[in-house]
Structure formats: C-alpha cells, structure tokens
Image (tube, helix red, strand yellow):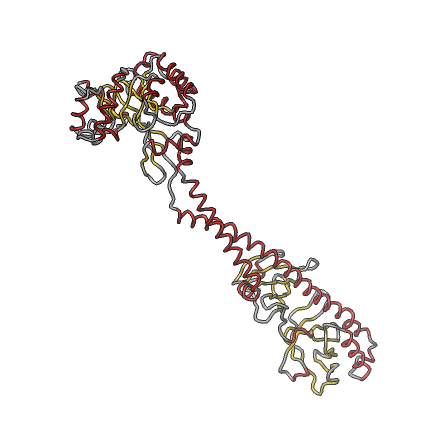
Length: 523
C-alpha cells in the first residue's frame, strides 16, 4: 500500500522552548501594557500636582504681586508702610516669597531684610511672558549674600522669589520624576523638576506621547491654552521594580506559573501533534501516499505472476512503520474507507500509466469492515475496468471482525463479480478452519513468521505442513510470504505451494522499478 508522510518532527525539548518563546512573546507585551496603564495613573496624578502648582504661581502673581503696582506712587519707596504691604502679600501667597521692590533694575528692599544697604542688581531676564512677567532663573537671593540663587518673577516694580525652586523638587516616589519647561519659539526658556533628572531632547516628542528613553518610560503633555509650558513625567523602570517589590514578586510568580503551565500543556500538545493517530490522520487527509509493489512469483518456475500493493508509512521522526504498526490507528480514526479509496484509485492510476493494468495479477489489502459495508466493492467498480476484475485479489487482513454475516455477503459479492479473495497473514489472527469455510475464500497466504525458520525441522515446519494440508483440502491456492533464503524456497517447493513472495525474489518496488522488472521478464 504506500507511504504516508507525517508532519516534520520537532523534538519535545525544542517544542517546549518554542512554546515558551511564543507565550513570552505574547505575555510580556501584555504585562508591559498592563504596567504602563498603571503608570498612567501616576502620570495623571503628578501632572495634576504640577498643574496645581503652576496655577498657584499664576494666581499668586495675579492676586498678590501685580496689585502692589496699584499702590500710590508716594508709597512705592522703602518705608515701613510699603514693607507692611509686601509682607501681607508674602503672607497670603502660597508659592511666592521674599517680595521685593525694584528700582533701576536693582532690588532695594525686601520683606525679609527691609531696605538693603547695598541694592542688589538683577540679572537679565531669561524670558518675558505674554503677560509681561519677567522671569530670571538664577537670581542671587539677598538674604544669603549671594551664596544661593533662586527663580524670580517680576511684574512692574515688584518682584518675588518662587519659594519651591530654591532646590530641585522631589516627588512622593523615588522612581517617579518630572521636568517642567517653558517654550518660546520652539526653544526652552526654563526648566525645573526632580533633582538629577534631565532629558536629552524633549522637544522632539509631541504632546500626549509616551516613549522609552535611557531606562525611563516617559509621558509628555503641554498646556492646552498657550502650549508654551510642557511637562515630562518619567518612571525610572529599574528603580520602580526595585522599590515596588510586591509588584515585582507578583509579576515574577505570574510568569513562572505561565511557563509551568506552558510546559505541561506544550508537552501534551507535542504528544498529540506527533501521536501516531494524528500523524496518520494528517497523512491521509493530505493524500500524501506513495505505493510500492512487491512482485509475486510462481513457485515451480519463478515466473512473474503479479504483485502485492504494500503500504509503508514514515512517521514524523522518519521511522518507517509496517502496516501492523499503524493499521490500528487507521481503524481508531475511522479512516479505513479513506485509506482504501486512496490505495485503490492510486494503484489503478499508476498501473494504467505504466501500461500494466489488466496484464498481471494485483493483490490489495482490505479491512473487513470495508468489505462488509460494500465500500470496497463500490470503489473498485467505480474505478476499475470490468475486464480487470478477475486479475485483482482482495486480501482480507486479519483484523477483528464485527459482523461476520455482512462480511460473508461482501466476500460473496466480490467473488460473484470475478474478484479473488484471500486470507492474508494466515496463522496470526483469524486463522481457524471454521472461519475459512464460512468466508469461502480463494487463496490463503502463509504469514512470514511461519516461513522464517521452517526449512529446518521445528514446530514451525510442522505448522506449515498442517496449514498447507488444510488449504489443499479446501481447494485453496497458497502464497508463502517473506521468503528470504534459497533453503526456505526449496522447502516450500517440496510442499507444492503455489506462489512465493519475499526479498529472495525482490524487495517492494516503486511503480517505475516494477515496470522495469516486468520488462525484464517479458524479454
């Protein structure tokens, strides 16, 4: 019958590793996406805090710094009345401190020190906002005598220091960092935020974008009103997982559990994918079938009389299996009809192409159920010319027979149409005399397990003598399978067995080689 090609075999360790890689390729992005979504809450919370501070600064400038310019000109000197007014503003302001009066671009008095003995010169503003507020990023703080600098905002004649920016600000979590910067004509005008955290080129990324950079996951947003102030909030990824040990532990356990389950189920999947049953199913479904033909010779003169169509199947590992090793899988899959149809149609096609159909005998193995159900006879009648019926022998494999009466009727119909019916591998299964009589077959094939070693006096020799006697008493022709030595052939000839088949004469051949052998015998 032929060779079925199974799926390419992947060894189990590599299959498990491949499964791990596939699962990790799916799970890790999902975990990363889940973690990033959780970070979004931190981004949003920090952004709200920064916005609240920004709004607080603007509020203090509008509510407490600007109104000082509305005081009467007579009070805009460093007297006690003005200092009291500035102190009131300083007290009420939440984000501004150390209010000061500016004259001729110099600080002349402050809420903390009163009138300065030496006015403190102001540096050139880093930028001026749309509202006319001058901003200096590193102005000397009068109270520290030039040892410390701070950020200032100036409106008109009055100035105040941004209290929170005397040092870099820290967030609640060490792994959560931020920078806030101003933009004027696409250039950074100021920048402040978490100490030690800087950005390479934050202007490249548009507002609303998240991205990875230098071990950080960053999120950027800019003011919807003026788009002149932006904030970048960052998660230090390594520091995050080092600090949040619970999250790291949960993720690690999740990944380990998934890999353990993947190992279990991939092992089961591997066993299923490369199970004999599935490989046979796939091989038949894809019609991956090649046929071999083993010649059969007349015993007395070794003339060629025909062939048996043999089935050899290679599994995924490349191992060649004999029919008795995989026929049970065919039956378990309920694929006997598929195999029968493939073998019948393909061998008829190949024999026709080689111009051998109808010239020599052809033996085909058949499952009892396919004979009993009528499937085999329908297939043969559909594809085989009537004139070739008498040259086809249906070899009944010794499988379990579920319905003997239907099998008997199937055999009767085959013989009625001119087909010969043989019991294959006699002696290994369905081998009782009553069975032979009830089925009324034409031929008996002695299994090779009896032939091997029968040339010497032994129990096998006695059994073959007994089998031959039974067959001759019933008028059956006899075929000896598995003949491999001249001694075996000589012994079988003495018993007047009709036909011989085995490696002594020829191994199973491809259709082309079999056609070549036929030509040799015709010469």
